[in-house]
Every structure is written in C-alpha cells, then in structure tokens.
Amino acid sequence: MAKLLLIDDEADVQYSFRRIFDSPEIELTTAASGEEGLKLLPRVKPDLVIMDIRMGGITGLETLRRIRQIDTKVLVILMTAYGTTQTAIEAMKLGAYDYLLKPFDVPKLKEIVQGALKTARDMRQVVSYQPLLETEDYELGIVGRSEPMQKVFKLIGQLAASDATALITGESGTGKELVARAIYHHSERAAKPFLAINCAAIPEQLLESELFGHEKGAFTSANNQRIGRFEQCHQGTIFLDEIGDMTPATQTKILRVLQSGTFERVGGNQPIHVDVRVIAATNKPLEQAVAARQFREDLFYRLNVVRIQLPALRERPEDIRLLVNYFLKKFAHDQQGQPKSIAGGALKILEKYHWPGNVRELENAIQRAVVVAKGDVILPADLPPEINDPGSAATTVVPSPGTTPAAGGEEGLTEMGSVARMLFRWAKKDPKLKIIPAVERELIIHALQETKGNQVHASKLLGITRATLRKRVEKFGIRKELNIV
Ligand SMILES: Nc1ncnc2c1ncn2[C@@H]1O[C@H](COP(=O)(O)OP(=O)(O)OP(=O)(O)O)[C@@H](O)[C@H]1O
Image (tube, rainbow, N blue to C red):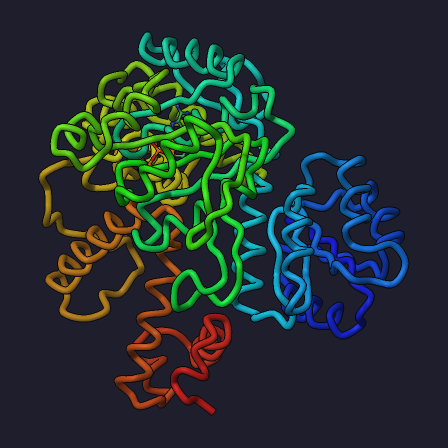
C-alpha cells in the first residue's frame, strides 16, 4: 500500500484529497501545518508528500528544507496558486519532485501522483545482483548463473562503483530496466532520485519538453513554465529507455548535457546546469541507426562508454530453471502462499522454447500457469499453448467437465480458444494490461449496447446474474457511458 502525506492548511483541499484518494491502495494522512507534517513524517514514513507552499506557520519551502534533513529520498510535490511558479521553481532546486498549480485538475493530479508513486517504488526497491536463490527471503533481484549473466553482474558492479554513462542493449524483456536500477541502487547516487523515461512512449514532439522543460509560451499549449526531467533529477540518475526513438533536436540536447551538463528549456535561452548520471537502453541496434544517419554518431560514442549487452533468454537456457523457481517463489510471496512446483516435463518444454519475449514472457507464462494449475504442481497443460505446442494455432479447446459451451458447440469453443490466444499474446506485449477485467468490461459494454441497456437480456447473454452485472457496471464505472439509470 502506498502512503501519502498531505500538508495543507485548507480544510477544502484536505477534503478533496480524501475523496480523490479514497482507495485500498492508498493510505492518506493529513497535516494542517508544516510543523505537524514534520512531526508525522518519521511515524508515517510516506512514499510521497504533497504540500502547499503557502501555509500559516513555517512555509512550504522551509518545511521542504527540514524534510530533506530527515529523509533525503522521500518525494515531495508542492502545490502553488497561479502566478507563483517562480517559487515552485525555487522549490525544485531544493529537491522537490514536481509541482502542481492550484486549482488543480483532478485527472492531472492523479496522473502526477501515480507517476510519483511508481518512481518512489523504483527508488526504494533495491535490486540485488548477487545470487539470490540460497536466501529463503524473496528479494527483487536479477537471476542468472550462466556465463553471459556473470559478465553482466561484473559490469553492474564496476558501473555502480563509477559515475560513467552506460548503454544497456538487448532484446525486449531481457531485463534492461532491472539492470539500470541495480546500478543505481548500488551507486553513490542511491540516496538521490532515479527517474525512468521510456522515450518511445512519449510522442516525439513532446519528448524534448518532457526531458528539458519549457518556458511559458514556447509553443501553443505551453501555458506555464515547466520543469523537465533532467532538472527534476538533479544529482540523481536518469534512465532513458528506447533511446533510439528521438528527434535530432533532442539528440543534440542530450549530447550537450552529457558533455557539459547544460541545456536550455524549450523556448528559453538561459543555460541550466545539472549533475545527472545517464543510463540509456535500447532494443534496436543503434549502430544501424547511426549508419542510416538516424542517430548521431557522436552521441552514440558518448553513450557507448561502457556497454552492457544483455543476452537473450534463448542464449542461456541453463538459467531457465533458476528463473522459474524464482518466479514461483515471487508469486507465492505476493499471494502469501506456498510456492507451487513444476513438473519435469513442463520445465523441459520451457527450456526448449525460443522465448521471443525473453524473461518478461517467461514471467508471464509462470504467472498464468500458477493461476491455471489445479494442484500444487505445474503441468505441461498449464503452460500457454504457444509455448506448450508452438505452431498449433487452432488447438481445440476442451471444455472442463461441468462447463457449458456458450454458443456454437465445439466450433464456438475452438474459435473462442483462438480469440483467447490472440488476446493473451496481446496482453503479453503490455504487462500493465489486466486482461480479464479488460475483456470483461468490453463484453459488458457490448452486451448492454446490443440489448439497448436491458440488463435482464444482457445478463442472460453474458451468462451471469443480473446482480453480478449491476456490480460489474458499478465496478468498471460504465454507468454514465451507457446512460444507464
Ligand atoms: N534476470 C532476471 N531475473 C529476474 N527477473 C528478470 C530478469 N530479467 C528480466 N526480469 C523481469 O522481466 C521483466 C522485464 O524486464 P525489464 O523491464 O527490465 O526488461 P527490458 O529489457 O527493459 O524490456 P523492454 O525493452 O521491453 O523495456 C521485469 O518484470 C523484470 O523484473
């Protein structure tokens, strides 16, 4: 559960926060002054503090200064009324993570809080790169005893001891982000921020301003001055994932930061100096992008000072057994249960598979198998079909006893099996997607649209009771969308 501490003397703001963040995943504590917030800090140990800059008693800036003396790492977001962004920028220099303008926009507030909580988790979860499996306790770690992984561990150790820029390469799902976090956790910058940015996930034209910030009026939608990630991450470590996806202008700016530690915000001309360690990663061969003149050669050499090449999982099948055991323990730990084991036949299948999605794909396969397995042992049949029997695109799905085919008898089931496989492949590409709720939500919307909102008919079509349907409509918040009264 994430812990949030709100420090604000306005009762209205405290009330809105209680409503916005009332969820089982967030524990909100409120304080009405800087003094009270400082007293609560050691007891609550929040992951994130959100604080107003102007309060009675000690100011937000002074409170921030004192928070930093108690905890160098806790993330602090400051809130400020319009017109006082200059103060907010001062606050960033004091080590605030971000700032929000009041009155705030609720979706924006939620987005910033979620982003900050992810960063807080990344910063607090130490990634170990020592052999883990002897320890009974589950820890977040990088697993591997194969020779290529041993080389990786050595390089992580060397990089953690230095402050050099690093380039991590390897196919998708090989653990590049995990390695970057391990370097950070074991480096001298471990007490300072770590920010991970996936360059490919941000539209090209916005990436430059995301990284370097912008001045008010720099472009049409730039209504306010904005601090970029590099400024936010002063003295910390920035992880730039998918570095190949950048415009030439952004590449030039990155090169300058690496060379001199300076840049200008978009639309600005005042040089800003930062001390940030850059760890970059890519799953595309950058050499080819350089040859095709899509990536600056000088930037490539600058990033490539130390390179960690992560092996694909198929190149180290001897690690599969260790990884499987590790994930079985990890999932049992998450569910607070006993780890399941795996049958020899199932393990052999996993060791022979070619793993295009690498460790991420293996992790997902084990997670699924743990859910699907009826007993304590994972059998070949519990593995996803594309792994268990690659090439069998249209395996007939055999209904388990007691289940009724929904429609179309065996043919319907075969078709459903293919759809499920397709959805599953899709879900594997997006590990954040919770596939069952996502599909359930779509089915419910569809059934209600088909039946023009008639819940009795829709629930029959879906094979659930009306009460369950009502609950789901509430749960997924689709009442408004469908005009259901
Ligand atoms: N050696 C390993 N030991 C344990 N877990 C691992 C290992 N390698 C990867 N993982 C797990 O696999 C998943 C994918 O790893 P990660 O996100 O670091 O990969 P990536 O190479 O950065 O992928 P992408 O290129 O798609 O961003 C994560 O859940 C990570 O914890």
